[in-house]
Image 1 (tube, one colour):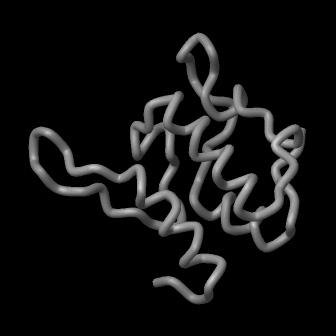
Image 2 (cartoon, rainbow, N blue to C red):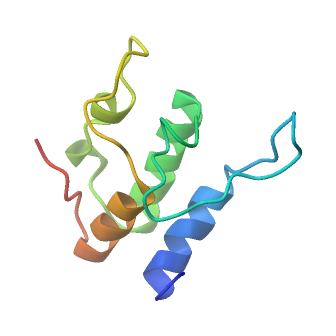
Length: 100
């Protein structure tokens, strides 16, 4: 359930990357705790583009975001999940809230 304009804007942004599955023709159901890497299986290039758009839209310094923490270059296990809630919290704070 979307509670405010910030949540709606974040969900809308992520939803632009939510294409129907080629197997089921259904779109992934986005929730606050959706991990864009593990759950959503987002392509790292798309995830990088999303983070850039997110940073621009919500005036977040992209230098604060350690992208490799969520999408490792070696495609290994992510250190932390990149969730929609993390995006919402950061947008509300006006800065990236998951700092090392």
